[in-house]
Image (cartoon, rainbow, N blue to C red; front, top):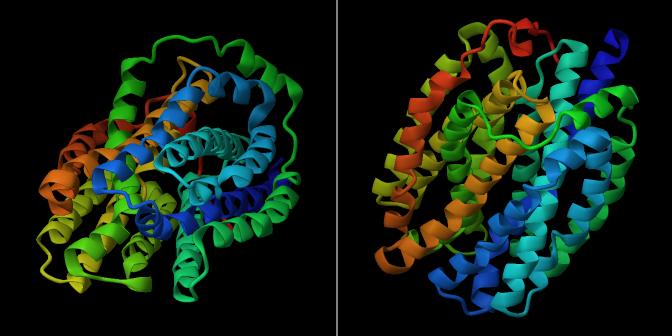
Length: 395
């Protein structure tokens, strides 16, 4: 497949870009939903628990399903499911229905993202090209683009539910057109993986990678859900200004991921993970101590750089482990990563209800410090597929 390597990797990267656009459009509208339903910080935090609950529900079957049908099929069916339900939270008329709609969205989100990561890992193995970080860079670019669409919808006074639904309707046919053009892997490849995918406890190496990624994605989720509310409540930002925090953050995440494959090839996974971990802690300090919104935006940018390469590095490290099929390892890693992404916001909300959002976001210093400690688990092991990949130009 060397001759079709470039088209294949471009397809994968485009899929990573398309998937989060509609979800990104939801993030700046969270304050609007909070105001519409007249929710306090704690009430909103409870509703946001629906996403991690939905993710938890997928743990028992997602890895085996994706192992059996393959990443390509999981992407195609996952896109339909995900884009059909992503606007449901914005339609919710009560906090109870908001919780359950977010729970359904959590199931859809974890399924399609697992399929994408499996396909990206297989693409690396088949083509010999390192694309994981850049693929997630396109994901960050997609969610940033979606968040800017959400900010634009606020600026023109569009209702959250109709604007997110419209974006989903536009993205769906494009996503299906691209994903159906992914080449099919030999059937035996998936059959062998599925046959080995019975449940067994993860080893210490995988647990270490999961411990590293949890703090990274917990921070991503917290900034996604609370940056707009933080700028409004702490600095009095309003209108489209509320969405700038996440847009700046997502922009820097994308920038870090686009350079991540090159930096990994030159300095190694552990070195850049430690540098980024230090940057994320410094950025959090700026956000928490900032006296004005412009300085807080600098902090959001620094945190974006800091967490940018964490998940792509973890995906590659987990997929390279040989104690279980890659899809099984990635199912566990994706669960932990999404759990961090989705459980952080409710925790911060509960703390923010009583001590303010500055105190709530301060909690992130602890998991970010744990991630910094576990960066050593990203060291390639001899014989791993990752250590045999050769850095090449992507496009």
